[in-house]
Image 1 (tube, one colour):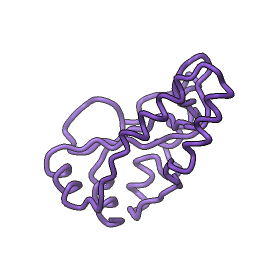
Image 2 (tube, rainbow, N blue to C red; image 1 turned 60 degrees about the vertical axis):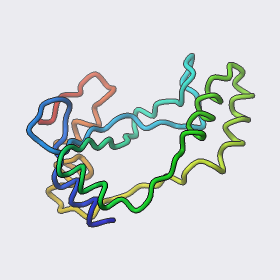
Image 3 (cartoon, rainbow, N blue to C red; image 1 turned 180 degrees about the vertical axis):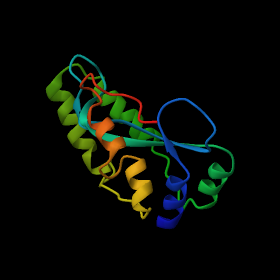
Image 4 (cartoon, one colour; image 1 turned 180 degrees about the horizontal axis):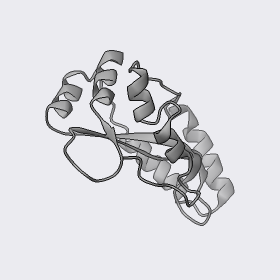
Length: 145
C-alpha cells in the first residue's frame, strides 16, 4: 500500500478549486476528538495541526479502489462521537468520550515514500507550500499555487 499511496500523492496538486488534475491535496485543521470546540457541539479544531484531504477522480480514483486493502464501517462510532459532543454538560461529555476512547483509531504520523520534490510540493516537508500552510489561521494565508 505504501507504493500505491506514493503514486496517488505524486499525481496530486495542492490548493482549493481549479481543475486540470486528477488528484488534489487540501490541508484542513486536525480535530481533537477528545475535546469540544468552545460553545459548539463538535470536536475542537487544532489550528496548528493539519489533516490531509485527498480528492481523486477518474483513473486515479479507480487506482485507489483497486489498491484498497480493507474498508471498515465506522458510521456507528462516528454517530456516537457526534452524540457525545452534543452533550451540554462538559463533564458528562468528557466521560462519554473517555468511554469511547478504546474504540477510536490509533492515529499516527505517516510520511509517504514519495520523492523529496513531491513531499515539498505537497507541504509535507519544508518549502514554500509548508510555509504557506503554517500561516493558515493567522490571517496571512495565501494560495500556494
